[in-house]
Image 1 (spheres, helix red, strand yellow):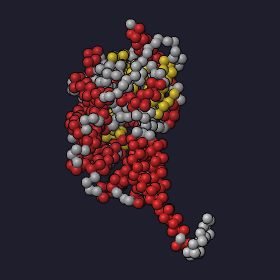
Image 2 (cartoon, rainbow, N blue to C red):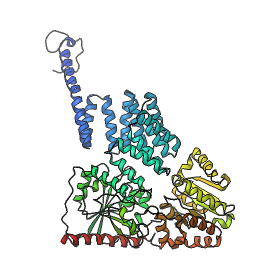
Image 3 (cartoon, rainbow, N blue to C red):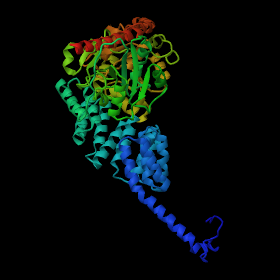
Image 4 (spheres, helix red, strand yellow):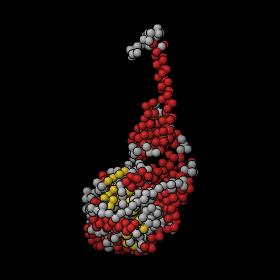
Length: 627
């Protein structure tokens, strides 16, 4: 029966004699209403199924279920919100934002403003994220989660004062909120306040003892403190390992010494413009051996950039495992028949150590991105150099130490379009020495300032230049000036610059005669960049791999005269160098060529040493398996 052109008051075509609206239309409406009700009644079950699929990381299934719900009810706020979170999990924050904006128009809430803020942070729209967080708090003054995230954004913009206040407010509202404790610890550490940081890390662990992220952050913090006993560090690592390995089954490997290529896997969350890539790219470019096949496993994809594109071309295979479970990632690595799997992150952010716990490769190594032991029994080797790690410190490591011939790090020098030519020594034109510190200000502690103040007092008319991202903030700049004044270093003696582009950063070295290194967290990348610009760094040596990093770099660059073993030597050498302008001018002219051919930047030589090391590891392993 075709009812398309029948009016409501027309006779019903069924022949009943009644008007259409009183007969078949009413029946049809009843049927449609019943069908609609059945669909609406199916939503709770569909919602449960979608959540379960999402928890299993079966994202396509979850998305299909949520879309079915939204077809039934386009204004189903919970499904719109969950679709947003689903897209976020799949590294698609822009799509997630679209769903949340629809949801918040229908039903504004503190939680939805918070979730929008999280997506905006992923999209690097932090100012707008701050607005939504404050809106969330206005709707719910007890929103301790939004206070915590506000603290994070403040600290990331180098406003530590407000940031720490927000973290404390979050804990005041909910003393059991472990993330606020964790973030307090993290940003106290970034200011060099190791003891205070440790207190809040321990508090966070007490509140959430099964969190591997918090435990790894705590281990990271302990690696900065040379007073921490080896036993304490390793015991904390063992507690982490218990969680990582609970109820898992590790892979078994049949080892054969064959003539096939060695499959070498690199696991990292830093395959982008990052300090790790500065020490990796040149080495990979220089690996010419036909005996190695290189695999990349990226644990953090949202930050891919031009460096990622270049690195991608240096691997035989590239796999993004950032959205995989640890067990799925381990299976993928095992399927690739990796012989040696290399961790490039240690306990730093976005690492893949939970995947290593399954032992997907017969040999597992940590190198480059971390300066201490992982403390984990499933990591076989730590690659070091003899200057950075002396034999009397082996008890700090659970791994076997494999010594590379010269250095554990080889810097990829910047291209000509980024770094300008070396200029003449600024002091020749200025008539005074300019000391430099182009580090993150969190590395600048009171002990360093005390040394620097003594140096400056003994070098009349000298200046001290700071260049740091924190100096974009006017309050931070003022606080630094006031802080330096307490050490007798006055504003007229300062050059203060905020960080700009990478290219502009290199031009800043044209203003510096030599760099005063920080301690106990010395420069790494900045030391190498300074050397490339003809600017030596005066460093102080400590006990740990991290604290001896400057020593290793300068020694391998042929600048062992710029290495100091105590405060008195550091202060004396700085003053002596500052009064020897002809020596500084001569060194500046020759330094780039000197470091270019040194072990610190000779990537071809380092690549050869790395290939030999990996081959030797495999030969040792196969020989042991044959016994």
